[in-house]
Amino acid sequence: MNGGMLAKTASHPAHSPRTIRVAWWVAFAITIALVVGLGMARSADAANLALPGPSASIQPPFEDGEECEADEPDCAEEEGEGEEECELDEDGFEECVGSEEDEDEAPPECLLTTARPRISIAADQERLRLDVRYTLAAPADVSISLRSSGSKGALALPAGKRHLSRSGSFHETTQLTGTETERALAAKQFTVRLHVLDVPGSCNRYEFRHLRVRRGGEQSPVFSETGADLRAGR
Image (cartoon, rainbow, N blue to C red; front, top):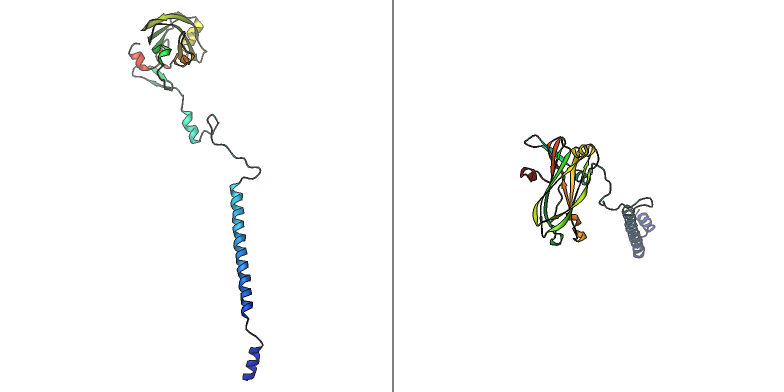
């Protein structure tokens, strides 16, 4: 009995140390290959996500002046800019004020220091009156003109040259035609230009006054830059 067991054991000899080492190195090499293969696969997937395909286009950042959808936040902020607001004052008159722009003071070489124009219209007499309170750094020749904008077309009056002192008030009444009176009554704003002669061209930006505040009746409106100009009787 014991002899049979010994014979059976002898038919399955133990693995040699060399065989074990070879098997270990083979398993180690396979493990390294799997790790390297997984790393390369992940790198390829990341590259595919980061780089657009041949048909994809890279969009530039949003730029000024570019159209956008109305529900985008940037558009929502811009839509309200520059719009005219109208409301009734305590006297029941409609007062319309456009967006105010930051106006810096003109440099001394431009001569025109301040100017507060006001336009009043008398439809029954077909007349337009321009009043301007002003200050100048020095007496000068000034070309004064005006233009309106409204639903019935523009009203433009030719420029007239006046020699103005250092400060004071300028008044001028113009007789209108029937068509000109209709355009003046339908005006949304008047722009008055006070062009001081013989000053640098850089002074042009300080020449314009936009009268966007309208008060008074439909047949006798008065236009000014601000409501305070009207209440002060300027």
